[in-house]
Length: 424
Image (cartoon, rainbow, N blue to C red; front, side, top):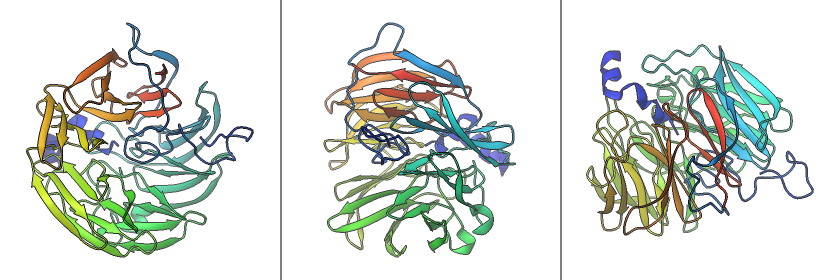
């Protein structure tokens, strides 16, 4: 079985797991996140869209200016940034290390560590995959072996922690834990994957760490939960190994569920995308995409296809009714950049052999961080592909999700973290 998984995923597919508190006059640790922050996976709204950014329309011949750079340990967790503080989560020796840094200068502020003995049977990397969450004065991290911790943002003091894999009898999956937690109200909600104990999804008290509810006999996916209000109903959308749920975040009650995923050496890696009352799910490995209408307590599938936009793990970007995404796989064949109209189930344009990439949206532009280390800037245009600039940021595999805050892009490969100036 291990050999089958190795051949099916390929060594570079670990990417699948991949995936401002400062206010004027207040110390950076005492305020809440504000415009311009990137406090969690895929930004303030968990959809890849940055707030109030002004980016340059082109770059110098040598690419964007590097403000600073530093070495990093193992893992594919991207940064979280709030105000002047950036949180790095990586593995150094046999510890998962959480580091707070000054985002502008790379000056270290504090660090917190958790022991780990994780060994990957598929990838050479054994570090954390989940982007940290900054919420008010707290930092939430979820380690590769299921270690969940809440840390104080001011000084790195641990407020509470759980060994979720042991407590809820969850398996490590193909690549360890890789679904970033979400904070919804006064709860931290985690795609734990305790299928045997009915703890596929678990909610913890943000204040105390006490488990509040658990639901679903499902293994975890590498997709991270999102929350959206449709009409007057708040939906917590969680994509597990084989199904996608809408849960009431208050009590975990299931509003609806829809099958999504396949058994065998496959993964669900992209986050669910909510556009108004529509839900878009996508995966590779023959799973394909599903486009559905969200109701208060039901869901209606509008179409399901493997021909429109099937991505291995990169979350799609929604803009003015269309979707931009990577069609294909990083480890097999070529991948293309597509713009699709989900209502019409139609590919509007395609840039073939673009390469695999994670995507961000800011200032009317699309940022694509390719896994080959190339950073590309494109215009968001539903009629054609318009490339504005391109730069070779790294010469090695670049798997971690980038973070964009205050015009600075934080990108890392397997060895180095860089802060790039993308401001106009």
